[in-house]
Length: 407
Image (cartoon, rainbow, N blue to C red; front, side, top):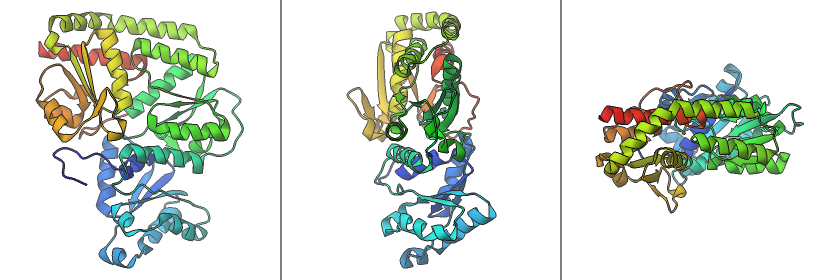
């Protein structure tokens, strides 16, 4: 790993850890240095993550030199027999990855000693994989090893795939998606993989009638579930008033559902009324101050693209500039936020800047403009969402308050 002035890009190991951390009734055991998990737990607490327990074995020079994995066995025994946790994920760190410790072989060897526990090894511990790839592989692995062959539920049900702790506002966004789908189609959520979920809920994913993939990293898992259970899926995130309406219409057509038109009408009408005055004020401001009519967004590619469309179509931002937080998500319209770009964005005082808490602090911008991690603030599940109708109102309020504070 190179040297960075700002937070370095997160690795595949961190993507896996943040993906697994929201699963209750499970434990993540890292074979590695004890400090890793302590810092990880601190971040997850700030993000409002409640779910699995995190453990680290610690690792010494003798362990590395001799290939001794007895510490791992002791921790698994404590977690399984003393703590009573029966689903245990084995996560490597960079040192065991370099020395060639085979967690798959260790899991097979130890399984007879713990017949009542499921030991699930993961292979995303090095720095050769970006965090988003680690998330993708972990979601796919969970779908493969935990979902069970069960009958389709009698009532209409669905899963949300891709709600993980690395995404800013992941809990409120998942709650808004559940609210919209439940009220529009009278459908019940089976599993939100992996925020606020349980092992037992992941096991029942195969019984859903359709899957909603809310980030591109979840598509591999959705494809697997479609192949195994025949479950159709839609990959999209709803942003803005018209964007949310189009998303609901797409769900209705794609899955041949019967929508509650009255609920949609009332939600649409209420949202339009709530943002009407803010929309007028903001649109006038942007027309009068052309040098401020720029919306710069830095974060997950699926998030920034949706917010950019909403800002441009509903409020008249003349220019929307997008920067992704991963090199694998570069496109014609999106560049990766290197250290140099972060410093440039922080120095540019013109227009509206939305990004991570770190970037906003660097640019001396208000924390309510945050749309990405990392930061050092505390968050919770009851914050306003960014997606859906309620997210549309929230974003309008954020932008309107920004110009009020400038004036």
